[in-house]
Image 1 (spheres, helix red, strand yellow):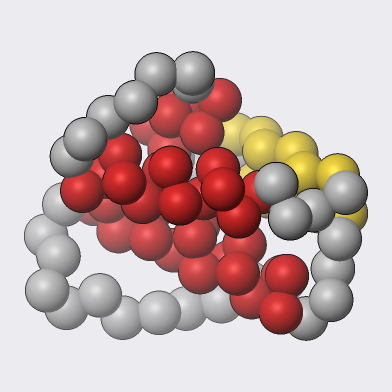
Image 2 (spheres, rainbow, N blue to C red):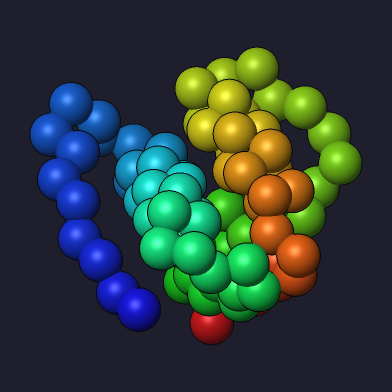
Length: 81
């Protein structure tokens, strides 16, 4: 599945990638998927999703939201491509 969103107010590419990742996860859940593999070409986003530390920046808050959403799935895998 592929999707496109427009984030006009953001200039930081990594944060935009993280927001896109979050929307993708939310979309997959809304569509009824419970076992997903999400691939991203953003190594920073993939590393942040796999990390166990907290980041209080806006990017970190989006990543934490992604981690919370990932708990809704029976199986959730993230990989860098």
